Length: 166
Image 1 (cartoon, rainbow, N blue to C red):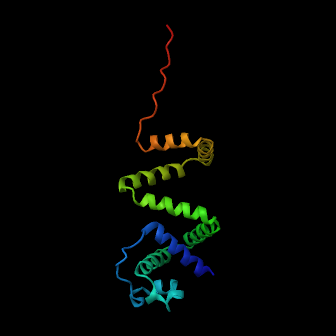
Image 2: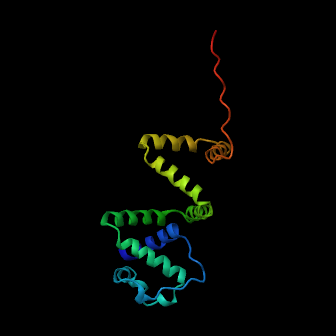
Image 3: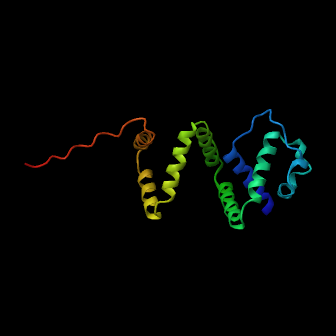
């Protein structure tokens, strides 16, 4: 059970992190895998040669990452995969679609998104919760306006100038 969960996690992370390989890419011979990769991918040994080259590459990269993980990292990966599996099909499809959009962005834009995400993750829990609540309370139009401003497509609206008494 743990191996199956680990492999599914690897396949998913291989898809998410590495993306899809070219359709005409050469497959990987089972014997070309390291012994550690073969142990992780043992359940595929009988059918390995029939797997699409793209899937072989994703699985081998995932197995390589898995063997390099600490026990704590593996535990976290299993937990992420369990959460993924528990999402409704529609939500998983939404996430896949958004990821495809992300992959099509220029590298500089992807980097900007990663940096913003890291800044958000490094905020205090209370601040993150507050920002998420504010975002969820916005109308769709307000959310769109915020996204446009954050993407630099439109300058923020001018601020009213405070009058100084005299």
